[in-house]
Amino acid sequence: MENNFVGIGFKSLINASRIIAVVNPDSAPVKRIISDAREKGTLVDATYGRKTRSVIIMDSGHVVLSLIGSDTIGSRLNFKDVEEQ
Image: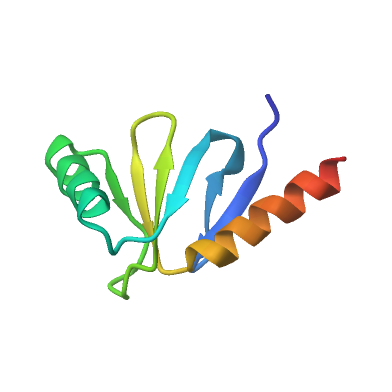
């Protein structure tokens, strides 16, 4: 397994191969996921106090909040996939 990192804002990086989903934070189920992760201690807030624009769900059970939009993160992930091929 190769470590490919993707930027999620303010020079923060996460391992792209561990990402399960990148979703918008507006729906009630996603808000529940954030709340549950906060209670469990698996929430990583990488927004630096800014508005949350995307929620990244990792295969380790961690939930990462990012100030970068899900479209932008998705395009960065797609670019890495094309680059590898």
